[in-house]
Image (cartoon, rainbow, N blue to C red; front, side, top):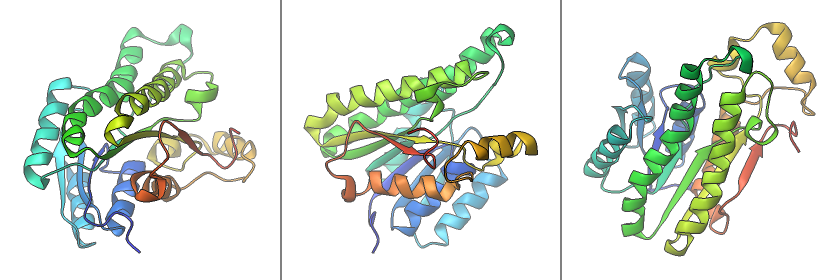
Amino acid sequence: MKLLEGKVALITGASRGIGKAIALEFAKHGANIAFSDIKADENMALCEKELKALGVEARGYASNAASFEESAQLVDNVVKDFGRIDVLVNNAGITRDNLLMRMSEQDWDLVLNVNLKSVFNLTHACQKVMLKQRSGSIINMSSVVGVSGNAGQANYSASKAGIIGFTKSIAKELGSRNIRCNAIAPGFIITDMTAKLSEEVRKDWEQKIPLRRGGKPEEVAKACVFLASDLSSYVSGQVLHVCGAMNC
């Protein structure tokens, strides 16, 4: 059973990692996929090819999610190419980890702009489309550290905590127009980002997780399918933790 048949989804930061896994899972459920990343490269081309192989329409767009103007133009382009936007997944994100005493203003501003301002940018642009449709599902990628914090990640934690507050506010603001807004809070997920950690650090993380393993991008993607589909038609303003009971 395809849960997203005929829907159009816009996913940011989707050329690889969790974003790509979401795009592929949505495509398997029949959604046509518009996705963006900071630049058009071989990763974007490969992702587009893999999506089209699943029998759906797919197109990658080079766009800086941290730019208000580029985000508005992206949404205009997607509507022009696909006709509508039913699901928005704000997934674009970066890390610049350091202890606060060593953190530069530049690293603070960069993480807040890419992780948090991008959510405002894309939601602001997409709401106009969804308000006209009187329907839509917005999914914002937060993190367990946005709930519990983490030493050495003050900028990242602050950005992900901000996403949660934003999500709850938008759910209340747009709910009367049948537009839902929820957040996903992944835990330790095995991606290119976490692969840069040492084996010792990875094992230490895994020992703290009750399920005793890191999560897979596909497991986050399946949670997104639930929030994007009619299975969650009465779910809004919530934070769904995908963390193996790491933060419960």
